Image (cartoon, rainbow, N blue to C red; front, side, top):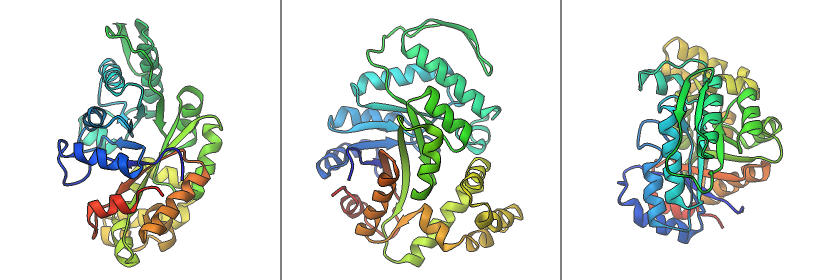
Length: 317
């Protein structure tokens, strides 16, 4: 399919130490990448450290680490340490995250997300290049920070981006963008903002279930949980789904969660969440690749299917 074909870790119901055997199996099956996240489970770096020390055939990435929840200096140290352990196989993902993650769950004010992400990106790049930094940025100030362990090769840095401003920042100042919750047909619109010579990675949610009604039931609950967050809502308005998703937003705003799920059109569900047989799911992933996603990272939704079967069934052919 592509030179890169990733999967999201850690797997649900599998301890981090148990992942060591899984990493060997993933590489044997043809997966090239494992990508972590940082929301409410494991942090972004620990699963990748286990992977780096377990299996040298896998590339590693985090999609994404919030720019609010670590101080800039600590974030630079974490990236540098991960790059050292990974030996050139690591891609860093930075992003603003969202108000629920940053403010409700971490007690940190979610102000100026674009500016914060831009400032952290600029600081981290300079810090990883060995510069001593003494500067007042728009959203924080740093005085006299310098990494004491030199970084031999600065890892590529991708930005989690949803709208034109952040997508353009990803193209102008980072090495590319990480996309999420979009259809294959949306990739071109995002690519126009990022530019042609930058990397695009995407997390793709997959429910490998041939019962379409059951798969859509699960997918609708996922969609209403994510796309009612303001950043994702604005993303889909920009993509042109405002009319299709307004009934969901209205019902959600009124506190009617059941109705919010029911009014999501089938065609929106089928565009945003991959489901069907293993062959159909792989074909759908292929459409993202054909549209310009260079690093797909499938996220298996373990509903009605054995994890081992799903990992094997969705492996690249």
